Length: 68
Image (cartoon, rainbow, N blue to C red; front, side, top):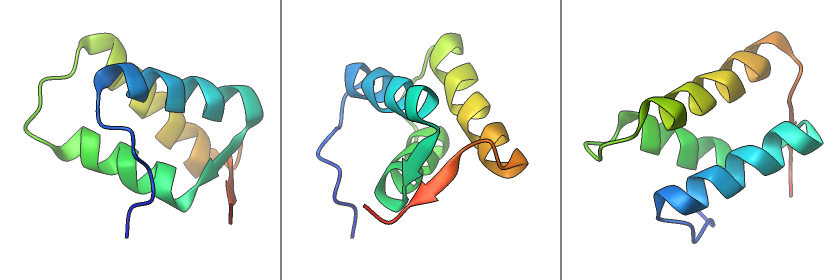
């Protein structure tokens, strides 16, 4: 179950900025980003780029998954 209550693009920026600043991502954050990236909603180029940055850093081990 997705625990994040963020549903707007403005919330997307908040989530991504927090992840990039802390180097940590929760499972709920990861699910939210994957849903946003795969959804039919229109994301700006900057939003798509930020999601890709987080996912790349996660794959490279620069962002750690947190249980919180």
